[in-house]
Image (cartoon, rainbow, N blue to C red; front, side):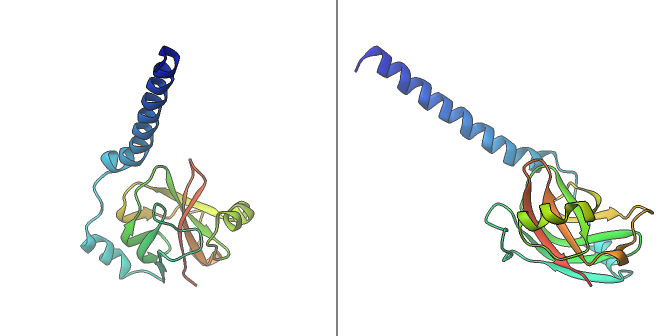
Length: 159
């Protein structure tokens, strides 16, 4: 084997290893840096005051093996609580939407009419305060979206 061929193989294998390591880091970092999830009892206490409920499901059109959510969503005037699991990932946000969507294209088309509730930083259960400027009655669905990569994670209709 010639020296240029050896250098090319060396470079390709090492660049491949770096790329795999980077991808694993993007996946693992949110898991390693996530705060503790709220206890199920705390979520259920918030759920008891909920005015709306919905269900995140794995089988939505743009959900896949790396982008999914599964569990119960509870919405009141001042809080959103989720009991279940989300696929780990970076920079998740919860949006309220006037319409149910289950694709990235539909999300992009309606994003201007949606409102962002907050950052989702845990992957088993989460709780978010609803800002005073948001009235959940004005919307009918909740969407978890990965802002950094523009990925649809999951959605639930709640009214």
